[in-house]
Image (cartoon, rainbow, N blue to C red; front, side):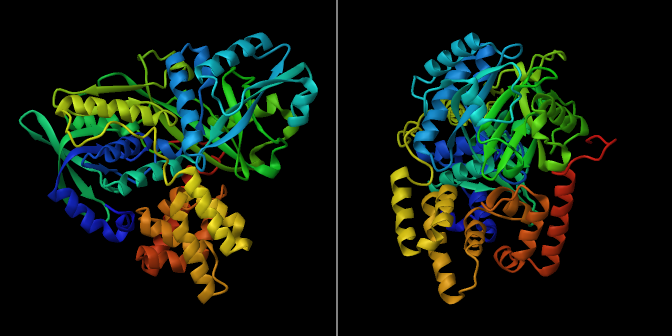
Length: 551
């Protein structure tokens, strides 16, 4: 399957391929775990397909804390294996995929009377560096009081003794998931969204495929596969029930809420990590492109899995924690640009008193008596390793084909090597120096595929001098990234993402003509989707009204 057929118009052909061929592996779930399994299998030479009920990265993998991190707090919980894996994966991705994974300094302020003492932080950081193989992006360093205040002058000075500066990385989680998935498609995998599984197909007692429903055209298809992997995250138990089994291990939903502030509203020049004055749990105010991301609340939610709505209690907790810790910043509700919540599927022992922050983020893989492989837990940072473990289990079930290679995801960059990306970018910068900054952003988002967008930008401006460069980007994502709705486009594909609901709606309205043409939407269909997206933003990404709770 080629990326130029990975689009809405090619869906009939994709479904024909899914229904006519028999696959080695079928992955259910298009989050980062499913996408990573899909890519790994494609690179090995396996015949692999992936189906997603809604849009790729539309659940947990698009609502995370947007960090690729070693997990400093895991050390406190003695989760040394997970911390080791996380540190090594972070370092690997910074080296292989630096266009997508951006290393940044994280500052932990140190206080005399609260928080971790300096000696404990020194011990923890040395262990953190050791678990990284002393191969972190930059070695940590301790700052004195004056150096700490020079970086973060808004920190409360009373009792401040200094700070610790260490490095982790930030990422656009949905962009990361899409790029991983696209790489699997480019290496021969077949993937489609808006295709929920309605039935597991059995021969005797063994799962041999699934029946899916195309939500766009309303048709049903049977997909056959030697092995089916359930990588649906918060929906994993729903697939297990289709197999006639209750949940194996106790899975619970932990809800995390994040607030987004404009960069100019936050009087900081770097990311800070601090304990909440309310309950001591670790919070971060992370610097991203043109914004600061603040989070995260973390509590059990007893509900059916769906898209979680930010609750008043979540927002109040975060703002109260921030303003008690750093009152001079004056970051209240009026400064919040955007809000979102996400569920994490965690493996718990059923003890209601267990703090979700202390529950392991390790993955767990089980195989039912029917051969259905289910994976739960895991995290964005370690998804590549989780995928390798899942495929090791798949090969145990069906045996190894002599044409398949070993896992190679640790060797190959996504979307082109760092050197090739830099060389291609330099070419287009020489062609059009005035668009240097935009071209650089495109290469960060799309890798070598950005060359297509740059070429279209120059072609459009040659024929239509007033044409906006962004038009070529819209054309690219619609033609190569399986965009089906306006929400897909503006929330999870387009790099010109604004952390502001009104700006998102304005951008869709402004680009209506080219979007309608690319997605084959009538004026009425566009208007209907625009109104639906406006309601989506109001429900899931706006501050809750006082006196209301999420449902």
